[in-house]
Length: 481
Figure 1: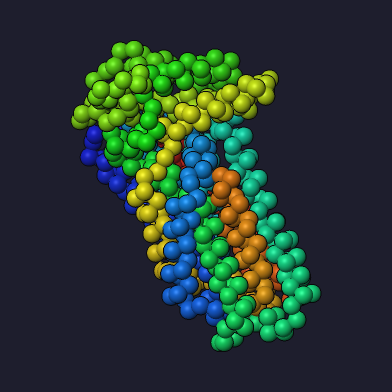
Figure 2 (figure 1 turned 90 degrees about the vertical axis):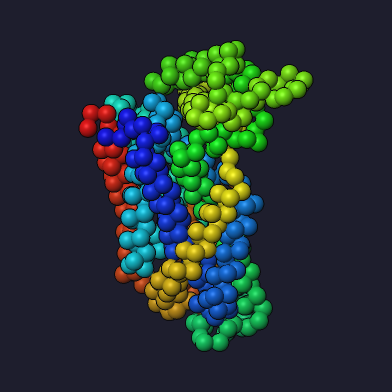
């Protein structure tokens, strides 16, 4: 339906702008769900007023996004096949963007409406898997080749393990508190009065830590999606990283290193990747109009820089180079997991893929700011439903200061570690599991009616978003429809 959409058409531009609006709204709903978890304990225990907590959380989310890098952002992007990120006909990835946000946004808003602390990360990952599967069916590819399963299992393992760790470690920390801190007020449900000053300080610090950690992880997830959208709208400006400093000659030399590995270990798309590598090599030998402006007076031998060329020719050239890079990187990712590849070869492949990725995987300062702003606004608007669920509806007694502090300390450590290692985890799952762990350790028990509702939402998130996103992408991208 959209497989042959003219990139310059008004319809394409309108759909891309619509997709940009959807990713902004999705990041705001991320604030409803995930960022609200960061302020839940500090608000519920009256350690800070809601306005103070939200402002503090917003600032720390912003700092987390700015400092945390973009490893998580592109770890998710790598779940998508190269032909989805960069359609072979040169058109924008409209079908992918619309399918992705329609599925993730609908589920995110639905679970928030019912006060269920569902994971925005699961929504997004399920939608990405759905798009990859929809693409495989639309192009009659094997499902084993159409989805980057190695990267997917790596992501899912982190999502599955992190709440278990949150439950166990938060429960253990609460138990340690009971054995070492004997102020009974710490173990009584929150009242209208804030807890003792030092516990209040701990709760404020943990809110700060979880908010910062959330920015380093969840805050990154929208960055990659915003980049995919604005690249479709402004390919001449954003298709390639202006700070990478690469030249066509440099890129051609790297492609020559990549070709033997692609030829030996690539999947059913390796012919397309080899053609993409040769395309960049040909551009380096015979520069084309719009490839980029030669660096004036360049005596370093670096060659023609990948700068913006004039008008639409430059935009198309930069978008084409980006497409070629993604084709090769995708095959190198498959080569990393191929049977029979040696340790030395695998290390070489990883180095080549990393070098190529630097030209296309980046995020301007304003994109990071936009992501952080959307998180903050979403938290301000929708935090109350999730705060009440975490404070009152998980356990048979309301949340106590010691329970809140234990859950938040562990959450900050787990989420922060994952953010800097490039593993996407769910703030919602970790904080919710942490609070549940403290409830069990305290002997208060859990409200199994609410826990079962949350568990059902968690279980159904992936299959629902996979089916919705995959079906919609198949309808929009199938050349036969």
